[in-house]
Image (cartoon, rainbow, N blue to C red; front, side, top):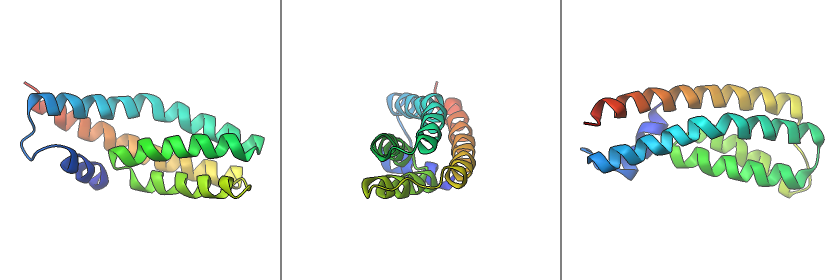
Length: 122
């Protein structure tokens, strides 16, 4: 949760305006809506074993995770992306388990922080 809060502190003022609060909520809610599908797709691609699509989707999920401060999830996606860029696909079973774990942690943090920001919106 600290990573998400720290990232948002980089994006908005200490006392965010209503527009900044609304932007933060859109960012967090978009991640919460899209990341689970992206993670499921990435797991499927890992099982398929084709490095090209794995690289592309890992890159995308890495970026969206980093944008909201889910640093552990972003780091895992970066590792998967780097391996795929080198022509290798990460172990699907081990990576899927870790990906699901980090996604769950990230979603918990995102939803908790979103509730905090919702309380700030007039």
